[in-house]
Amino acid sequence: MKRFWKETSHQHAGVKHQCFTLIELLVVIAIIAILAGMLLPALNSSRQKATAVNCVGNQKQLSLAIGSYTVDYNDYLVPFNNGNAKNAWGHVLATNGYVAKVSSTKGYTKFSEPGALKLFRCPADTTNYDDYDTVNKFYIPLSYGYNSRIAIPESDTKYRLKLSTLMADAAKTPLVADAWKYSQVKKVATDNYYRRSIIGAYFDIKPYNAHPYGLNWMSVDGAVHAVDYIWYQPKSGYVDIWNFPTWAKQMYYNPK
Image (cartoon, rainbow, N blue to C red; front, top):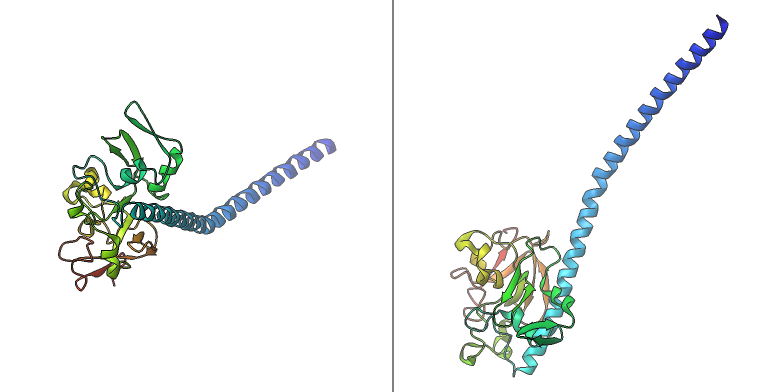
């Protein structure tokens, strides 16, 4: 009888100990969940800031590439496209070797540094859009739009603009900007013209929130702006600031 009582007491003591351990485990899990809830937003915010900084870096390098092109081509800025929408500004820079060394094999353009084409992709871009050049037969990852009023077409200098003619409004005039979020106006999500260009009238959110604070855009003077607004023409929706500089307004991500 005495032996049975001792074993039973030991078993009960064991059950009590197991129950206490389970409670401890639940408390620890609850604490971890609370800490995760507190830390994850901060980690996500840090990640978003990092991608935004990398995006600024991409645009600064593109600014240098565009500047080199302008020097080589007698002050003319990179054209928006070659006039028939076969290739766009990014392809012009790429095929002329301003972002990577180029070699052509059997009519297909190849790059000795294909990773350099990532400059055209915003790290925050979730669309994974690739723009195809039917002339040179290659894709570039494209997140950034170009000022479509700058130069169309490439082959006719009559419609092309020189950097020197835009300097008066250079700081306000967008040249390259985040352009990977679109409204459904005119089905811009499937139209490569709108995917390649900066057009204020078709911004999904004004301007689209490519980054938490708004977007990154490069002005004609080469500076890159990480802000919540972009300069545009309210009547047309375009960003040809030089045509009517007194009409230009700031379009805000958070309206003010």
